[in-house]
Every structure is written in C-alpha cells, then in structure tokens.
Amino acid sequence: MNFMHIIYILLAYLIGSIPTGVWYSRLKHQQDVRELGSGNSGATNVGRNFGFRAAVLVTAVDVLKGWIPMGLAMHYLSDYPLTTMAIGIAAVLGHSFPIFAGFRGGKIVATSIGVMLGYHFWLAIFDVVVLFTAMYVTSMVSAAAIISYGVTAIVNLFIAPNPAYKIGFVLVYIWLLYRHRQNISRLLKGEESRLKFGLNQDKKK
Image 1 (spheres, helix red, strand yellow):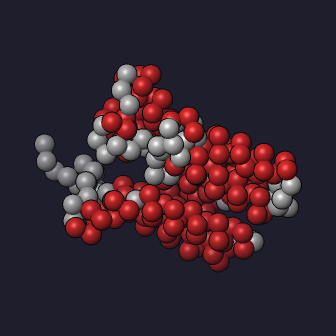
Image 2 (image 1 turned 45 degrees about the horizontal axis):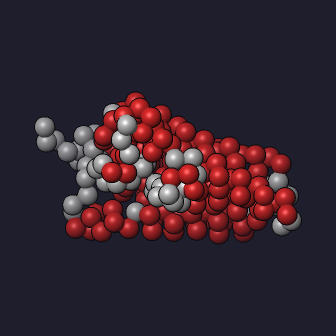
C-alpha cells in the first residue's frame, strides 16, 4: 500500500460521509431526521418520517456511496485486493461516521450493499433478493438486513478470489451487527418495529 492508495481510501471515506438523509431532511423539510423517530439518518427512518419516495431517494444515493468507490477500486486497483477492500470499508465507515454531519451516521445497510455491488454484481443481487424475501417474511427491515448480509458474507467466503475479500466482508457484517445492536436487543424482546408489509406486518391503523 503506497501513499496514493491511502489518498484513495480517504476519498472513499469522504464519499461515504455524504449524509444523504440529513441533507435531504434539512433541505426539503427544514428538519434533521436524526431528531425524529429512531434517530437514525438512514432510509428507513427517512421513509417513516417523510414518505416512500424520500426513502427511495436516500437509499439510491447511499448505495452509490459504496458502489462508486468500490467499483472504481475493483477496476483500477484489482492487483491490490487489500487496498481495494480497505476502500470499501472506508466508504462504510464514512456512512457510519460522516465528517460532514458531526460523525453521526446511519446503520450502513444501503452503503454496504453498494460496496458489494462494486465488488461482485451478482452477489449483490443475491443479497438484495434475500433482503426483500426476509423483509416480506419478517416485516422488519433490521432483521432482513442482518439475515441477508450474513448469508451473503458466508457465500462470499466460498467464492472470494482473495482472503482480503473474505475477511473484509465478514468485518463489514460484524460492523453491521454492531450498528444494529439496539435493534437486536428489541428483536430478542419482541419489541422491534414492523413494516405495514409482508407476512407479519403491523396492521395497526
């Protein structure tokens, strides 16, 4: 890893640091989404407070924050898998600790999927299919994210071309679990919020 590689990693962190949900809520609604609902800046909380279209917009940008750095790294730095994986992790950490929003970020679901897209397109599609399947069965975004990325990280252990990618995506998954620690606590207590979608949806009016 040379000096330019460190610069690329820092740039990936800065891209990941774009606080999509925060900027959207402030510009469009003159509110900070982190002061509403769950206090998270991600698409789920944005959607609950500002609607489905807002959630889609924030999700799309958050995915790009991982996809662009990782995709460029896979294309131009494929001979340096450790640097490439570090770039992906940097984008995820930027989303978690955005320098442009007081280091208070999201739970990395969309950005981590973006990193997977840049790394292996079909593996990312598999992740998304499992995500929506689990979301339909559980009616919970947090449970679906935990299940889908965990399954995908396990599959990647068998297909990754280099140990850096095997270990790297396991680390991303461990970080995703940590970012969802409060959700996991609520899941264990049966208190996690449910969507008005799927087999176990919240049917309250």
